[in-house]
Length: 211
Image (cartoon, rainbow, N blue to C red; front, side):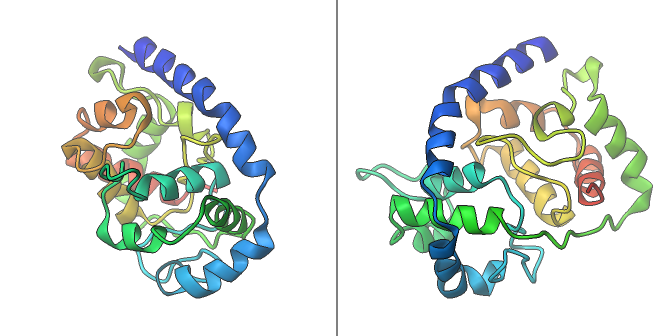
């Protein structure tokens, strides 16, 4: 099962590599800064360091990943958005493709003032799942996609290091219930379905402390 998951990850990564390179190459962070200061500031902060755990930190995030998420929040040709969120759907709706690339580049260039783990009792379990996964349950190591230090990989796999543990926990649970379904090849939905509440919280706490 873990081998199958790894193959799916490699397929998804190669599938989006060209698009992610194109998004990065044409971006203008200076123009993105204006959007961040006028549209995004209330929830995510002008520099992407969010003031509240309900809204994720965007500073230092993989620009290609941010661009993809913004695109996923938008409904296209009358079809529902790939990522259903009424608030973000409204924010993303007026943004052009160029706007999305620019603001993603701006946030990606900013320095993250990372969150910290809040429940030290969960760190050992979180570290084990992050580094090794759980072979018996068919759970691959988180580091395989998000990197040993949680820095993320281009386009599909976000930086999780320093992210609010509450936000990471909420997203894992959303994948588990399939409330969120914009992951490549259903990878996160398959993984989250095998994680208990305790394991989800442990991974989220561990990721928050990574740098």
